[in-house]
Amino acid sequence: MTQLIEPHGGILCDLLIQGEKLNQLKKDSLHLESLTLNDRQLCDIEMLLNGSFSPLIGFLTEADYNSVVNKYERLHDVDNVYVVDGGPFVSQADKNPTWTIMALSWRTSEYIIDQLKKQNI
Image (cartoon, rainbow, N blue to C red; front, side, top):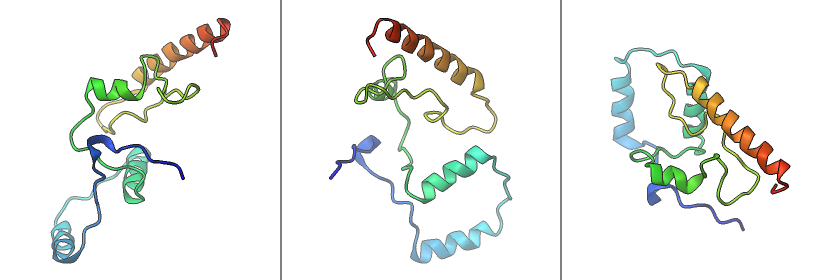
């Protein structure tokens, strides 16, 4: 059986609300403003609901991030997997990460081309 990696912070967050707290939240929600979510935000909510995401308690530090990928966004444990999309970014409706994603992807692509020419991969 495959062993799962340790969750960040060592704890998976239990998002299931039950009992009286659930009833109170339902009542309170009747007075909240309605929000319109974009596709990315809806996807993030779906991932939280189905257990694919466990919310972090706090944020990844630079050391935490670097423990997952190297400076070319390659996973340390898997030689042919590079994280060059917006997956690691927090969803923020007021910021557009497109240029950052493009820059990281470009740098990673140049690195992969260089390594292919050197026959390292």
